[in-house]
Length: 69
Image (cartoon, rainbow, N blue to C red; front, side, top):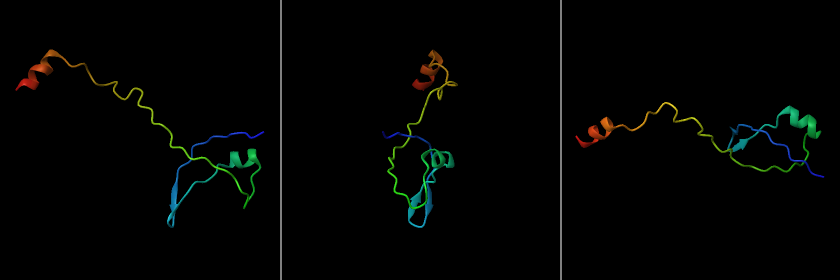
């Protein structure tokens, strides 16, 4: 049975390639070794915009009047 482990990792450039380091917790859990073939799946995480507009006030009548002039 295959297990799917997820982690977030930041890419970095080495030469013309992008590299991702596998965290040591995953290495230990999966008992990975050097030069071992592994399968990876790449997906960019979705950004959460929850609460981004919390400091914006309501559009008021005074704001509408300013737009006319």
